[in-house]
Amino acid sequence: MNMALLIDGSLVVLILAVAIWTIAVRDSFAAVVGYAIYGLMLALAWVRLAAIDAALTEAAIGGGLTGVLLIRAAVRLRPTESVVAGEMPGRFVKALAAVLAGTVSAALAVVVLSLPVPAPTLAPQVAGHIASTGLGNAVTAVLLAFRAIDTLLEAVVLIFALIAVWTLTPDNFWGGRPGPKYDTDPNGMLAYLARLLPPVGIVVAVYVLWVGADLPGGKFQAGTLLAAMWLLAIMAGLTEAPPIRRRWLRGVLVAGTVVFLAIGFAGVPLAGAFLAYPEGFAKPLIIAIEAASMLSIAFTLALLVLGPPERSEHS
Amino acid sequence: MNAVTFYGLCGAALVGLGLYGLIVNPQPLRKILSFNLVGSGVFLLFGVVARRGAALGMGGDPVPQALVITGIVVAFSATALAVALLLRLYDASGSASLAPPQPVKPPEA
Image (cartoon, rainbow over all chains, first blue to last red; front, side):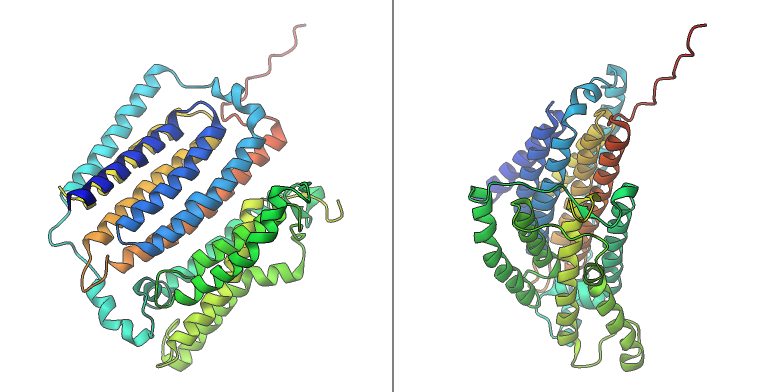
């Protein structure tokens, strides 16, 4: 017990130390790298909190994709660094901000220390109804059966975010390819890894999706992994990001939501409610939604990282 | 005081740290980063609430855990949009400053 407490204590100290580093360090690039490390350590905290599904998501998105996104931005914004850093607010504003932040933290700490005992929980309700879904993973059951509407709306949010990013395209590049053209040494280490890793990554992603029904895993984790493999191949110069005007691309992006909605509406005549699954068909329908969503999520996340088009189709 | 409470206090501290960075750091990219710290602190608080709800052989209440997964993905898409806006601002104006532009002095007659 004491050993476990020691591990948890050190992990908390490490997380806070890296968080302070990302705020305090001068160089933005260092801060961003710190944030990626922070995401990975937070994933460990999720493991300690027995939330393996959240840990996988945090490691893949918090540490991985957000890291790539922010590192690219930090490199591009480097020329502005010294100018903007000079706009640091005065001592008075800093002190005021510290008092405000301290008050908020203290209030939250009081709340944490006075959480009700016994803790309210929906676990018994989930345990009572999970048999009707045919799934073994309670989190997947919540995501795709009990609270499926949240997951559906989330898929829509992802698409809206991508549309919003695309609206920032300069007029002359509309419909073009996102991201720069990567000229990487075709015999270099990056290109080598980009040939070696994707086959493994794709197999692991499909596995993570498949076991997600019964064990930790699912479409977000699998989709993020696929997105990472695609981004690796793009950034190594082995393939190019598709022009955003392509019909097939737009089809793939909305496929997950369309399948989700179609199965949802089919539930109205067949099972008596929107997003209700007919008796005995819950699991195959959920896996169909997950498979279609995984592809859409992978493409959406990768294109969110790449940003709006920066060049025309043939450049 | 048990380990779960540790993580709860950690989440509370992270929210404060992020809030401080959000106000004090003048660079927009650092503000986005700080905002993500606030978000992850909130998620960690969720994780603590979930862990406390462990029952019937489940390591935690699966409902808040599922909400956190949704939250992480939505937070990422918001971050991507914020970064895209920032890079567009830089491309369009050559600066990434959020300070109000200096008033242009009329030329001396």
